[in-house]
Amino acid sequence: MKIIKQSMAGIVVVAALVGIGGCSGMSPQTRNTAIGAGVGGVAGNVLTGGSTMGTVGGAAVGGLIGNQAK
Image (cartoon, rainbow, N blue to C red; front, top):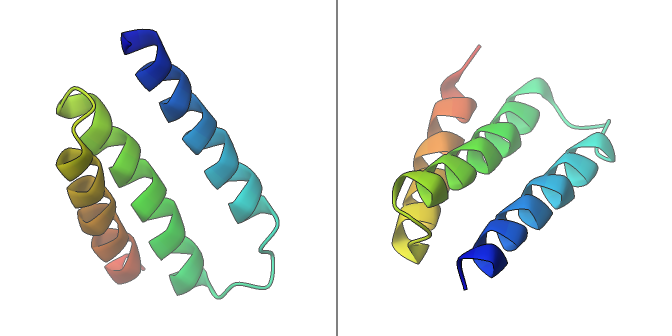
């Protein structure tokens, strides 16, 4: 089961990178929000051992930080 969770996390990261790469028309603030949410989601997943709430919470916090970054 642990291998499946790790594989899913890798797939999510790859999907996020492809999605961000395809959105070249984004404003810098929107791009930073998306990047922050992706990084925060992965970090939350890793830090909480795959907890759904940790992933969602990490994505929310990361998106907020990315949105405010200049």
